[in-house]
Image (cartoon, rainbow, N blue to C red; front, side, top):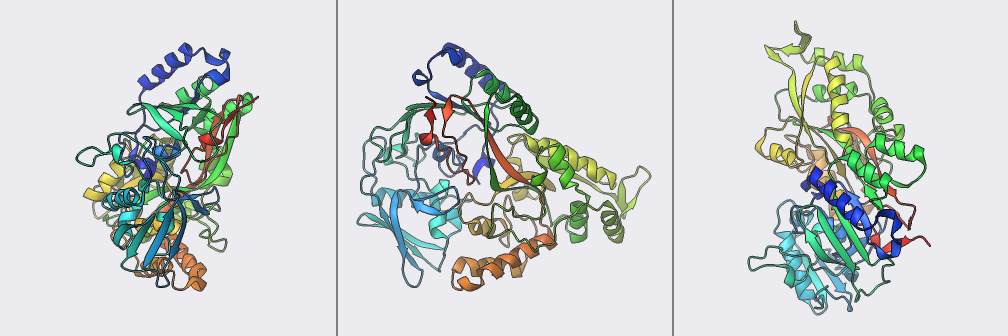
Length: 516
């Protein structure tokens, strides 16, 4: 489930990096004698690929069988090629013959098959949802047998939870005790949950990184990250809040890299809830949201106002013909009145003696979420809906989904963490729902359309099936789109070559260089 498994680092991490930055001599020391200093908002509380949120693929420590470029086109990773049988039930992934782990051992088909078998057994990972029969080694290739055709299998094997680690990474109980990957960087020192030091892997088969040392530090407060970027204590800084980003842009002293992501900020509604289970109520909530104003005032980016679930950065799924989601408070009030809700003496809507009060959960890992939650709270209050906003840990959303206590949740969802969005959608909108998808809701027509797409049997109708999915989600609103997402990073003027990955699989550190 990617970044949602991570939590924000505390203020102590800020102090730690400030001390380290002073000790290194700040900007006065020659760039080539210092590591690249990367600062971000995420801690890592696990080394296991299934729960580390792609942390070690972003740092280019670990690899997957299949890679993807910035357009989401699948590329060779540890597998240099792959093919499927005519019936789609058997896939073969031929490994790169020169791949070595950081401990010097070879990346073999047996090791890769064992790692994938372990990943398949981890609940909640994309591979766990694939109709697998067996994973085995066949010479220098990994063979995957399926119970039924599953066209997006190569895309699943690009997901970060399927990274291949050396056998020395595992303890006696198969728990991951250290990360021994095969990427261009290896871990030289690690201090969970907030600090990692990397060194270039001398036996990396590809082009050697220009920057040989990297440090990553998790820093919780967005204001602290901005201060570190401005003071030169960070070379690349992720997770900037909109107001700090605007201030840095206006100052003009630092570079800003940006990319529109296939990510949407969503308001998840418990459709099994006695109030929110009414689709008319969910439509009223959607009509209450002034997305354009929120995107302009809070995100500083009016183009990010969501008119449908899928942003234009997902061209196969974004439907230009879809009727856009609108802001219409009068229509929202009418829907609520038709559903039997009327203002009480205190202005809060009531029906059959029950007040319309709900709890909205969100988290601060992405700094725009709490401020958007407050804006949503204000707009719903104008309709007579009392929303209690609780800002906690990201883990509280899947926990509330599982125990049924969740009412509303605000979070962002990247539909291309698996390069084929179909895989994430199949998980999020399965009949039983998904942690970051529907809750208490399912639609047989949508399930059928997703199944048809996954089978790959009728590629000629793929566009029609994708359009059907969009139309159903737009009408039923099991999740309510709020905004699309633009990722930004603040870059020191001494660093060259920063490009952001819209799939958020890699920070592409090996492409960076010190400016001459």
